Figure 1 (cartoon, helix red, strand yellow):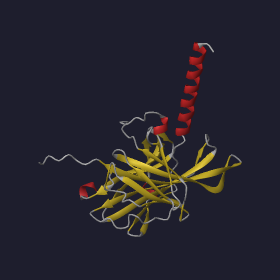
Figure 2 (cartoon, rainbow, N blue to C red):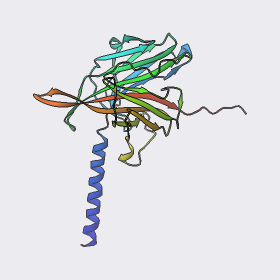
Figure 3 (cartoon, helix red, strand yellow):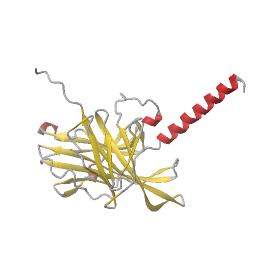
Figure 4 (spheres, rainbow, N blue to C red):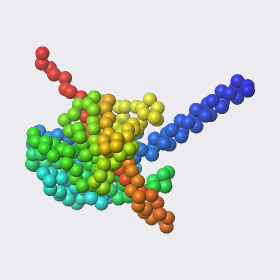
Length: 266
């Protein structure tokens, strides 16, 4: 084979592999609930702003998100409906939502979103990501490992706030209240300011699996907001233009990991 032809073929296959890899990575969708702070220790920080979106967070690529079916707060075992607080927002140049909530009571506050099903043509599948985040306030932290009763949910086994980058995070995946064994959990960093770049598309979405008890483990490499999305098939079908389509359900949890402050003391 002539050398020029060989080089051209190598370039073609390398380019094709890159395109296919990019296409695969682009399928990593994440529901998002990002509060302005994951911990509140002073009343001046108690007025939270929560961004609610559907996106590829590492690549900073948004998707239009319909108004969620429900937005709730669970605190001290009681659930409060905050759906009426949702207002339209532009996040990552796409239709998204925002809510404001002022924390007035100590303890763990679990915010959860139930979205409308999203049809993804590339996968010929509906996607429903039940998404939550946890905010701790005023020194109390009991109840952070309590589920809030979502159809698909990640129950943290590592406290989901007050963590340093470099910590190891563990979570339990529940689907219909039961541990989900051998389930893929996709992990992505919210690259909000575009300060991080993946070496190649394989690095955009990290993937781990749950064990036989539905537990997964992941080590956090750097500070910021990290999302965990445990994916499974619901077994149900939804109609799309006269054709029944499968439904992927995701249990999604967002939690913040911080870098320690540099002390000016000796």
